Amino acid sequence: MIDPFGRAITYLRVSVTDRCDLRCVYCMAEDMHFLPKAELLSLEELYRVCAAFMRLGTRKLRITGGEPLVRRDVMSLFRGLGSRIGEGLDEVTLTTNGTLLDRHAADLFAAGVRRVNVSLDTLDPARFAAITRWGKIEKTLEGIFAAKTAGLAVKINAVALKGVNEHEFDTMLAWCGEHGFDLCLIETMPLGAIDGDRADQYLPLSLVRARLRQTWTLEETGYRTGGPARYFTVAETGHRIGFITPLTHNFCESCNRVRLTCTGTLYMCLGQDDQADLRQTLRSGASDEALEAAIRAAIARKPKGHDFIIDRRHTQPALERHMSVTGG
Ligand code: SAM
Ligand code: SF4
Image (tube, rainbow, N blue to C red):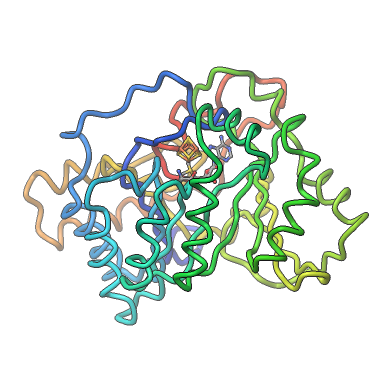
């Protein structure tokens, strides 16, 4: 599928639930109202949409949420999708907070998953509890090491938060190097209402990178994922560090992805509201051809770039929906 700006759309991110067992301060309000079950696509419906995307040229699927591993029987979806690897599909990956990963790591590997992104914003137990509102770092660390033992490549995702974890990145980079993980730092994005003020949290990664360079040798790499991350190799560890700066525009031109929410809404851009309701298509008894036509029509409307408000003083979210709905 080629969009109106000549970009091949080969990457689908799929949120399988809006629910989560944590409440990270930058992601959710403490008192979240989750969707009634009937509004979610069933695992069979999710598979059907993924299969249609695969027929249309999707090569990479990432399962996300909410916390994907809290969805009941989600492993059956991984097994189904994993069985398609090699038939045009290159990989199935997962983004998780890691709390349930120790239980599922071996099964994920058996299903064909080879890489996982685990969110870990700090190595300090008390800070972890504060950021996630009630999480226990031990669970996430157990999950991370279970994934490593199972043979999964691990990338650690950390959201850079001003005054919270900003002085930990040296330690985290060393820890990742020691254990063989890549590290990806993420700028906060203005998505969904949270309890605090986002302007207080915003930390530009240009500053973080300059600070890291005082200690580490960051070598430019051509490594790209088609997303907003810029990667460097850390000469001292041999592993990569990525910087995700979603508020800059310079990545939109190579954007290769669209996002499916757990309710079957297809967003053509993380930072725009235009969408296509694939659940309605599915539940109206559409044929595979009609489903593919609905997807094609949506891709034909993929916008050139996002509209995030760059004014850092803005306290209102640029978009109403939370990251946990669209899938991070
Ligand atoms: N629960 C899983 C997890 O935490 O990895 C998957 C979903 S989570 C929404 C995906 C990623 O989005 C996480 O790395 C999280 O830190 C990041 N994220 C959530 N809200 C964000 C925000 N407002 N700005 C930047 N990143 C955010
Ligand atoms: Fe849950 Fe992930 Fe959002 Fe944290 S970032 S609240 S773990 S969905």
